[in-house]
Length: 200
Image 1: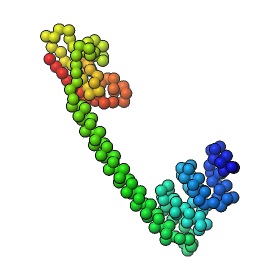
Image 2 (image 1 turned 180 degrees about the vertical axis):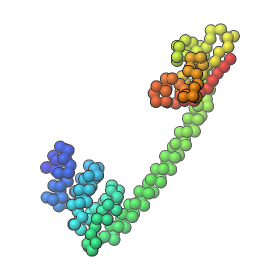
Image 3 (image 1 turned 45 degrees about the vertical axis):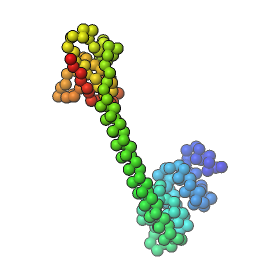
Image 4 (image 1 turned 60 degrees about the vertical axis):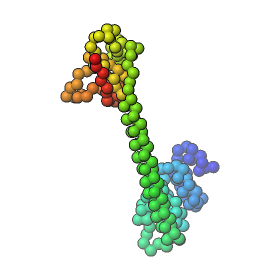
């Protein structure tokens, strides 16, 4: 109960110290460090365990996926006998290989998803955009199409579907060589950075 209260009060290091020094329960200490996910707690646990072979064995069997095992192995004193050391090292290597496989699998999924989304975005951007008398210029708020159908006009439609009269957009300059959607640029340059231009 005291451990729980200390943890709830934010005093995780004192809670871990109580588990190690009063309960002498390495498994509970490791589980507590996992739950808190705090690098300082793992460091405290390693420092406390470094002269206690049973604790070292427990750490070697469980530390692999949370902390670099080298941090613990380098601190083991030469000549110290560690129970089941070979089995613990084999488990570390197995855990490491499993992590590599998981990362490679996640990378493949991420690349496949990114490619799929890129293709989907490309297909969407290649679709035509309907421009009619109901649309307005997002800058001057007047109808995007002239009332006189015979009058020449130039309309810029961004991929974000915002439309502007060409004359309502800033002219390209050295600082901004490409035209962009004023609305989406105010939202950290959203999808309106590419354009379609319609002229008559």
